[in-house]
Length: 92
Image (cartoon, rainbow, N blue to C red; front, side, top):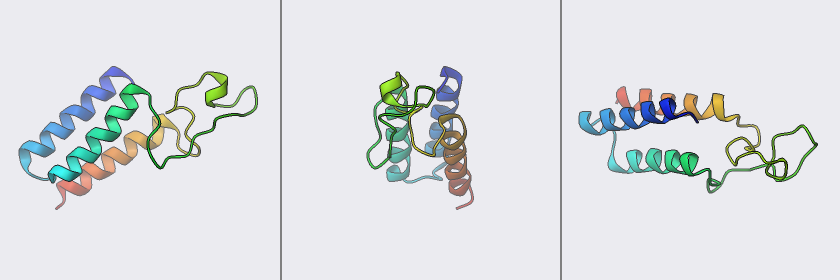
């Protein structure tokens, strides 16, 4: 995740908190997921490719935890999921 994407997600969390559209628990869950991404640590309950072919994204090939998620590309799903959650919270 790039610095500008991280900044955007933090600002979205602040907006949700200030507007009261998210519970503390919702915000804490989103903040935790973002923190794991920033720290490049494995998220609990997520599957990762530890080994693979020479050209595959896996931990053994030097990829990050986020890049090694199974069926969950970092550039597509993470941002999309956070945006979906933000939109759902705005519609409450």
